[in-house]
Image 1 (cartoon, rainbow, N blue to C red):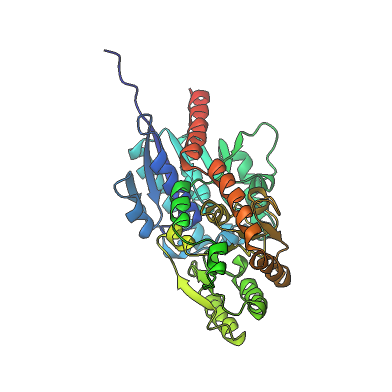
Image 2 (cartoon, rainbow, N blue to C red; image 1 turned 135 degrees about the vertical axis):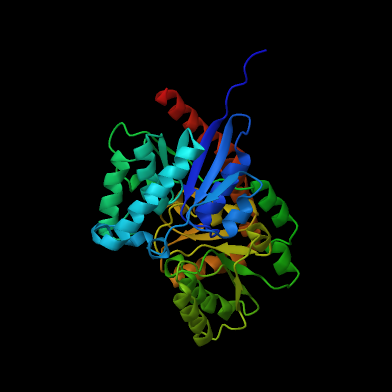
Length: 400
């Protein structure tokens, strides 16, 4: 009998155990990975909900990172952070712990999934001489990160990882990779069929308006100054003048120390007399079910998104979408065809786009159906997993 080929061990490294967009994308990838060829393992720098999601799917190891470094935000990567002796000492000791853990796990490839994991996991991979992928899910640009951080990360992109995966063309272009550096643009996948099926179980915008029922116009994502919930609230104040019966659920919660902004947002809503319109739904474990309840999905980020996966999720659910122009959003939405794009920070333009959908729900439904087809074709998680596996094959081939 022929000898069975050994599975290739892929070690994923992520800094957080919170369920952010990058973590949900990684969860989707691990679920779809071809288990006849690849064996996934995960190292996280903290314990939390993501650990529970991964259990039963793969081997999970929590290598705790000291809170003083764990809470160090991605926008603090730079010369000052490097020169902070105490944090540097803690970080180097942590890399030592990672090296010992990784050596025991014996992976064939290390695939890091966040900026902090890129740095700490990347150093461990280099010390162990294990092929390394950086999965870059953040735009490395001055409008997204401090200039010092941008400069350091772009330089490290050239020398630390063997291969780079960017979640959008917009993200890739911010890296300024040198000629010959291996890369591939691969969007984040999700269960498009589930979003479609749950969305189809709810009345559409057209059906809801014909029946005279309440229209839900919602924004989905963590509550953060750059996610644009304030712009959304200002736009909803304008929309309500013409359509007083609308509701505006804000789906998501503050993460990474942004609770102060969430409190400010509550004050803004109150001052706009929108307490009967804006509903703070908090974190939703089932995003597909939450989006299914909407009739229009809003994306209002004030700076370009690296990807904007929630836009694609809304499209897959058959919802008309209005999104901020730029970044990954402009790659997902064809303006006027599969959705509407508006300038960042412009609540008047956002309000007018929403009003155009409410005034012509028949055209909005046609746009939503075209958007749904686009999402189904480009974000199916099995297809995304095959693209990532092709990167693994390329790396393993060149490493032999």
